[in-house]
Length: 172
Ligand SMILES: O=P(O)(O)OC[C@@H](O)[C@H]1O[C@@H](OP(=O)(O)O)[C@@H](O)[C@@H](O)[C@@H]1O
Ligand SMILES: [Mg+2]
Ligand SMILES: [Zn+2]
Image (cartoon, rainbow, N blue to C red; front, top):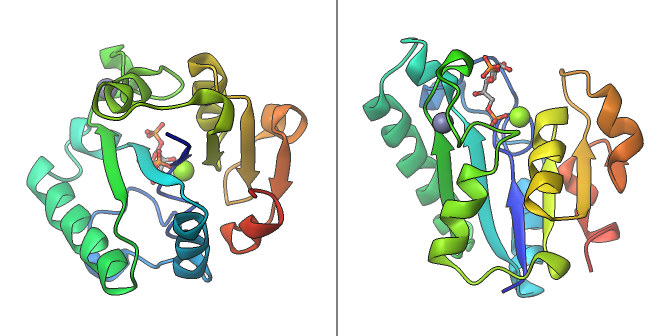
């Protein structure tokens, strides 16, 4: 199955820093049109997001689930239905297998869906997003510019774009 893996904070919503409240979740302009476009092209959409705010005690797993369910309902209302979410709740010092740039979330997704790496993509705003995709064997990578510096990916990503809004120019 051709899949677009997506980072959340900085790609789908503005990365206001450990976002966990609905009121602080600002969808990035154009994200619904872009997701409907990818859906029309037959891509499965899988969000892979580091949520270290849980492990850091900044918010709870329940907080994350409430926000996540609300986000999925918003996508549903806009006609985006084939979307799934995998997250890592750990702190960096937990040395888990799922925090990007590790590939645990991608592997968990590949147990649930038959993913064809060659026709799949990764869209992220940090170096660790692009590194995780490459570590998993996905070569089609797109760096979205955000508040975060991503020097390595500026050179290693297949495309570097200002926002997800223009994704239809790159993923056919
Ligand atoms: O971009 P994704 O993976 O969807 O989620 C990133 C967030 O969990 C947070 O990740 C943190 O990094 P640390 O996890 O503290 O290194 C910071 O960069 C926050 O600004 C950011 O909101
Ligand atoms: Mg991000
Ligand atoms: Zn983890």
